[in-house]
Image 1: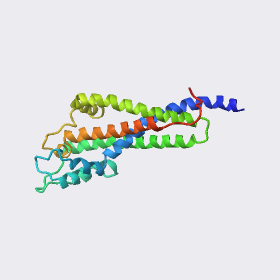
Image 2 (image 1 turned 90 degrees about the horizontal axis):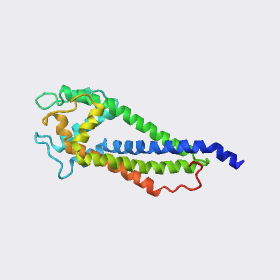
Image 3 (image 1 turned 180 degrees about the horizontal axis):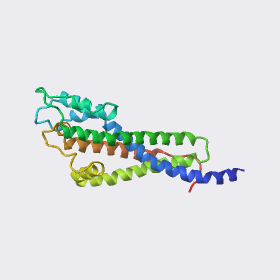
Image 4 (image 1 turned 120 degrees about the vertical axis):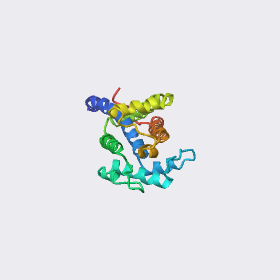
Length: 231
């Protein structure tokens, strides 16, 4: 009877092990993204001693306020008027029409991406919960461990590309999600004043560091008990 159950469970063990492996990078990158897209990261980043000051006059407090509103727009149901209604002291709009249009484009990518990441993270935890006291539990754990190493490998490969030429990496990323040069602005534009290139370099470093570091921990620390039924 036990051998029969093992034979019946083997296909499940193989499939679920690899599903877990593929879900882990999504979960870890999603976690890193949510940490980077937070007021916590803004507070740390803008206060770094070597972070470039805004040569056009934004103070630290103004940067935190306006960048925080950009995050609020991306992470809530707020519409673009949240940013469009902002003005400088002389009454001119804080964000130009092109900047507002780009923020709408960013939200159109950010929201589905984070929803997908959150959903697949729930799937992974549901899979791990369902695996308890099942014959294929050890296979799911091994799949998660394998996913940790996969995440580390992906982060290392992309990180090397970004390190060799961050601008090429940055440009390639935008080409995947945005049309033409809609994401390029003047140094005097508010989006660049709030989010200079240095900001994105550090954000990518944080994102890859979090995802890769957690992947390494999963790879090193997970030690599934029991003999796997999947090969």
